[in-house]
Image (tube, rainbow, N blue to C red; front, side, top):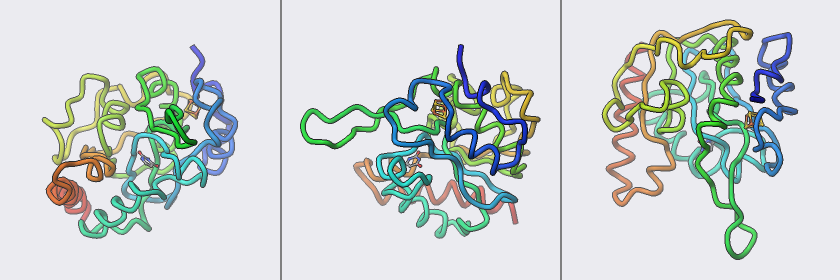
Length: 218
Ligand code: URA
Ligand code: SF4
């Protein structure tokens, strides 16, 4: 099957990767989305955070986590003692997957499927190989499954430092070089805070998990 691996450039620095990802057709999502939203941040970050996919705002602006979920993430990182400057933030899937709302021109987020996660993963692997972080933070189930495989259960394993998976993250990916962070922490997605019945409780849980990540670095 077609994947992002067919679009990987020869040079493997972030600038070359970002440019090449701009014309990726590794799955069908490029067709309806506005643009590729590649990762952004410190190329020497000690921490990489990976979300699900760009949302409506990110799709228009071309930057990850600059919409409502990004606001929650910025605040939670600050409360946990992680400076967003000094991190690198990206998504498991680089194009916005959506369905048109039944009326109006709003676009409704659709969770990416396994095919898209696997097709897009070469970009994430290449970003990790370029940045070489010590710690990877997976925000939500999609990011966690991109890294640990489809059987991963976020509710059972969130908030603790996990050893890197044996091979899932790098599956089919030797061209881009290999880098596996020494530890991985999975937590909820910031947009789950916005949807939660008890937002304060969900937010406190996100911050508590991110604090575990922050303490592992100091
Ligand atoms: N949600 C994500 O997972 N990523 C973004 O960039 C924005 C919202
Ligand atoms: Fe390529 Fe990923 Fe976009 Fe699919 S979602 S077209 S694999 S960048």
